[in-house]
Image (cartoon, helix red, strand yellow):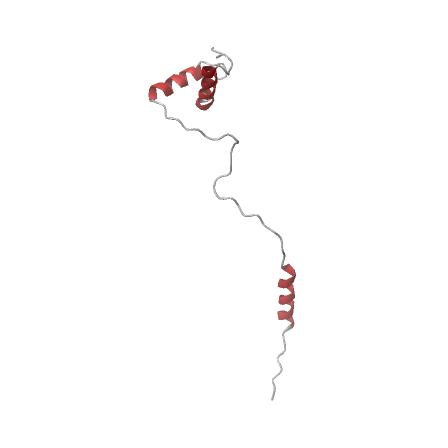
Length: 89
């Protein structure tokens, strides 16, 4: 005697539901690591305590009191003759 298998209506709905959700959408992969913060590459330098204090004093003597990084950038430009003259207080 052959047994007749009947699929439940719930199973038929689930199959249709999951098949309808199938998509060929391309999802770009996330890049690893910290996101880029700027366009210029980072250049790290080591400064002695004496030179760092000298740079900090120079920055404090400027009208706008730039950060240490900005002070170093300005001093390099001044040394290369490409920057504006230093604006002291």
